[in-house]
Image (cartoon, rainbow, N blue to C red; front, top):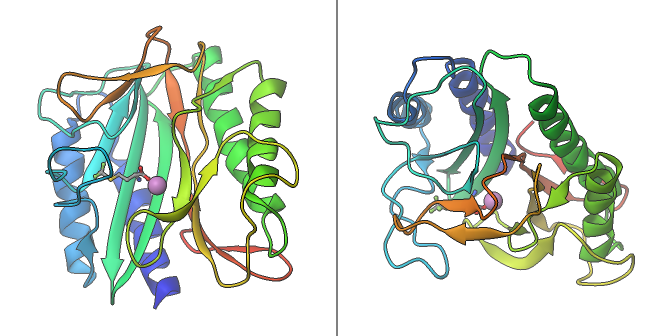
Length: 243
Ligand code: MF3
Ligand code: CO
């Protein structure tokens, strides 16, 4: 059922991302994602969910964070994409009691070398995290693999945010930082369900919370990118549940 949940999420997130073009609003993508999730017999996981530290439940299905917006930004109708926008789409769902979480970042119809490097590196960092993961390694090994990629591409890690356990609730322990030292942090064991989510910026990586109380934004206004998969930890490696 976890695998089915992941497959539904992968399909819906891909179809949502395909609709992300110039002139399209975040609100339209949110409505599309919600309808697709329900049509497949699942429910949105973020709608009505209150993350730790938040003062209210999240009022939408999809998080849409553009350019210097880092994560958790609201899919408003005023948020209309234009050429060159770096758009992070973060989506979670519940199916038969199993929660899965995934995100990807799109560059809206432009040929921008910095944005391409940012997106490519963040995607590769997620690949590196997954390639490192198996029973017996530690969260520090994951973080070290992620931050290595940031360094190679001359980008910054957003250190205040990171991956997490998931599967039965959106956020479970352990926290999975996107930096760390090999062998440090918590031990990964067989059967754990984790969401890895590298978040990089073209600037320094410091963030602040907007007055809307949802949007995390870079302090230096630099653009950021975000990729996330839910994975299942096995003896030999990690299975990508949201592929
Ligand atoms: N995918 C997001 C994360 O891991 C979860 C967003 S919950 C919301 O942080 F309530 F903010 F939408
Ligand atoms: Co997550």
